Image 1: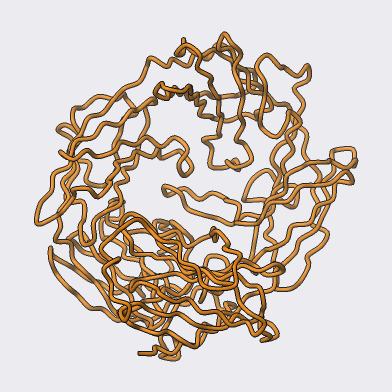
Image 2 (image 1 turned 90 degrees about the vertical axis):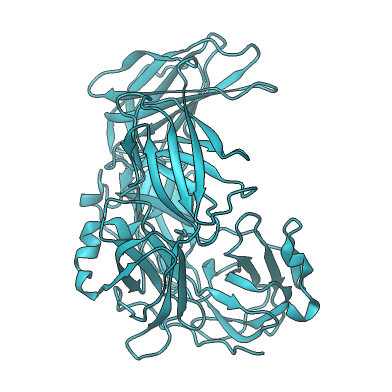
Length: 567
């Protein structure tokens, strides 16, 4: 199953000793005290080697099927931390401290995964040296077309990411900054690496607009990439070095004519409120900077202003206590004029019914399965439609907008895979359901088998040492089947395991760095195609395949030394 290896998001526990944030009651509560594990180590400054006091360390479980579990601690004056009473399993270790970039243990920068820690029953893992990277800082100024400072402009530092096969720029964690009254900004907490920078100014109030409020002038500013570019092809990247400050990253916002989308909501439930959200569907526009919201008036009238030409999804959601949320959507194209008369009909909700069938020992009961449809032109969860799988295997998904959708099912039971997908008489086993001509076709039937293949092995670096933070990606021969792609990270021993593999032909790659979703980018894979290891599996197979690390970035810092395995 895929894992997002990008930006680090975790909750800091500000206490001096180890604290367990326990999951709900599970079978692991029956563990004997001697079967619990210990993780112990030291956090140091990557550049100086000095121990770091007050670093917040968090160990988070990776192999739970439902509830997560984590343990956290704060380092003492010697940089030491100890996490006790840890359950056996697979974990990621992360740390946060003021003045340093948030990081995962073993990660060698943005886009590089951390080292997965595999803990066996009773294991005492010692000697971890967690090297935290001093933060990078970027400063600059944002001005308008006349050179006057722009206050409250949003500046973001972005990295390329592949979402549904489309390359887009996404802000990294801790990468946002806002200009002051002099138009100046200071972005801190950046990890070393290359970034694209963007500046955006919403004169109408940071994306929120009230009903009936229309600006007399259609003058606005486009989201601008450094140095004053409108698209990725003209933008220049910025190199951020650990512990350094990059200054002079200035923007002059580009004025242009903007337009509005106006319309009306259909009748809502009595006493209900609503929110309008407009987001670009164009890959060439920064989606995170083009997202705008509006509030309709009591009659359902709305207007969203400050939009540049392009294609947009207009989404409306009603909300009220005691009533089911209603959703309506429309696709609107802006060329060279305002768009009026858009009608969002809350009554036009179609429903797909479906059922999940279990085969070959798949245990799907009480697994909390959800079946979701993600629009191919959408970014992450925006536009996601989902339905909870009931005890009898049936589910319902409400679909508001004709579109092409990718199917998401989770959390998958260990060792299981999606064997087949049919929407009526149409085979959709590649994970794509085409509803662009309407929500018709019959019932969605998904078959899940419990006898998926397992592939494991070890990854060694160019010096024949264990590669402890490699991304192992399994690429199907049938490249358009999105259900067959798999990803795993190596642990502290350079070992990886991929379970629940669909029968078929694949290639295995072990990369030192791979962006989220980049394994579906044909241009990226083309340059490494000959380095992939061919593998073919049948249902229930257990195959071992050792790999050599593919180095994509010679400038990555060395991997950390392996911790002591302990008992």
